[in-house]
Image (cartoon, rainbow, N blue to C red):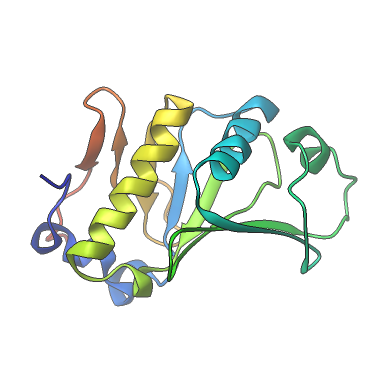
Length: 162
């Protein structure tokens, strides 16, 4: 049985309501070790991925190397495809937190809900932390996320809010 059903969350996956790239963040992360756990997960998961520094693809370095780059260094992105056609972009800019974007246009229908739930749960389980999704730019109001206490993705707001 899926964690969430399309009919229950379609508003939360509507780009017109949430913005095309809602914000996803892992609560309570604050260390290089947390980022390294994400890097290890990406490399061991079988997911396709690409590490970009200044727009140039290269091998995925250790998290300590990425996070100790000097101020003003080229931007870095870790692009991850948990399934073909669905992209999550992790931005390891600071050890102070882990966040990433997903493109809602790629997550339509029950298959999209299942992929999103699988991604949130996999990241949350690896880190042992809650993972929450908010509308683009609205960090204070999570709408759904992985809850490690129940080991599944749950609604965190009323899906009929708008």
